[in-house]
Image 1 (spheres, rainbow, N blue to C red):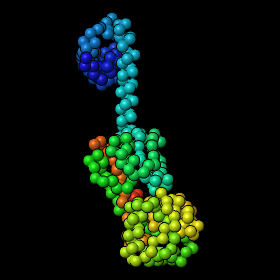
Image 2: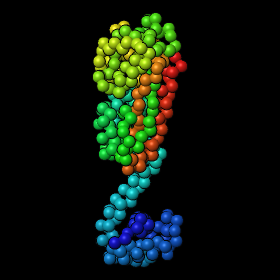
Image 3: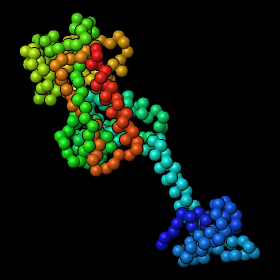
Image 4: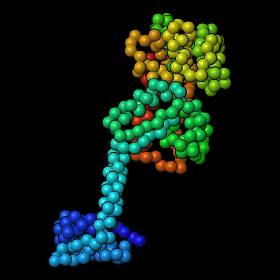
Length: 307
C-alpha cells in the first residue's frame, strides 16, 4: 500500500465539505486533481469511500470509519512537522551532558543556564563523573557532550582540546596577593593543597617546583580543587588550581572574596576536552551548545593570565 499525504488530505477536505469543488478551493488545487487523489486513495484501499448523490459526495460507512484514522495521521504529521521546526530553531529537544567535577558544580551550570534562558522546552541532563567514565559514555553514544580531561585518541570520540593554564590561589590578605605573577620560588616550603598522588596535574605541579629548585610541601591531598579554595580562604594553604574551578569561584562569590587568583609560572597545564560521539552527528542543539561551551572555556583560559 502506498498512501500519500495529499491523498489523505484531499479525502479529509471532501469529507468536511461534501464537495470536490470546495475541497479543491481550500487546498488550492483543481477539481480534477482532487478527484484523482480521492480515486487513487480508493484504489489503494480497495474500497469505495464516496457515492455521488445530486452533485454531492456522500461518504460510505467505510469513509466514516477511515476519517478518524485520517485525522489522526494528519494531526500527527502536523505535530511532527512543528516539532522538527522547533528543533531546527533550537527551541525544543534534549541535551545530555557528562561533566568533570571541576566544571560540574559551578561553570557548566552557569553556561547551561545562559544557553537555556530562551529555550523553555529544551530539557537537559547534566551528570558529574570522572573523566574515564565520561569517555566511556560519549564513546558509547549515551551522552551527546562530554567535558573532561583529554582522552587518548580513539576512533569513537571527537574532541576539541584545551591547554588550560593553572593559576595560583592565595589568601586575600597574604603578601603574595600583591604580585601579578607568582612563581614556584615564592611558594617554596609553604603549605600547599593538591590533587591525589599520581594525578597528572599534581605531577606537573611538582615538576614545576622542581624546575625552580623550590620545595613542594603538600599539606592537603584532595580529589577536586573546590574544597581547596575553602582551605585557602582560611589561610591554611596555597593551591595551584585549574582556571575552570577559579572562574566558577569568582563568578559565584561576591567581593570581597577570601581567595584571589594570580598567574603562575612555570606553566602548569590541565588538558581538558569537549568530547562528542564520532559516529553520530550532533544535533543542531548540541552543535550550538558546543560552540558556546568552547567560547566559554577560551574566555576562562584567558581570564587570569593578565593578573
